[in-house]
Image 1 (cartoon, rainbow, N blue to C red):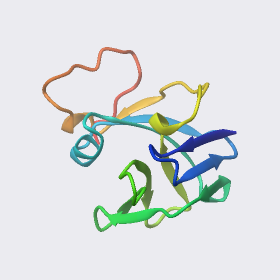
Image 2: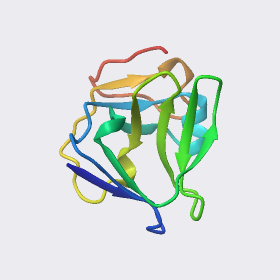
Image 3: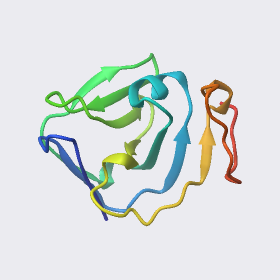
Image 4: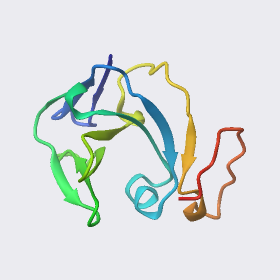
Length: 124
């Protein structure tokens, strides 16, 4: 089980299974939201327990992003047509025990860095 929280502590959550997939997203929205790429875990919605108010931003016609309305911390990403969602690895309290499994949207990555590991890449 993983536990996470926002900067101010108004929102906290647990993920029962600890995340089924771990990725680094290099898309333009994630870079703007996080200031770099966004590392996330992914799990079925039923595995989440969320305490506090999460505000949702309709990021596109296909997905929304969840954040703390008090401190603005970016916590979640959810596709409208899926029963799963992603959670920010950067907000996990303590070690995760997880390893990066893939880089996604690498065609959109910033020009100021290179991806220098052996983790698989997906262009989109």
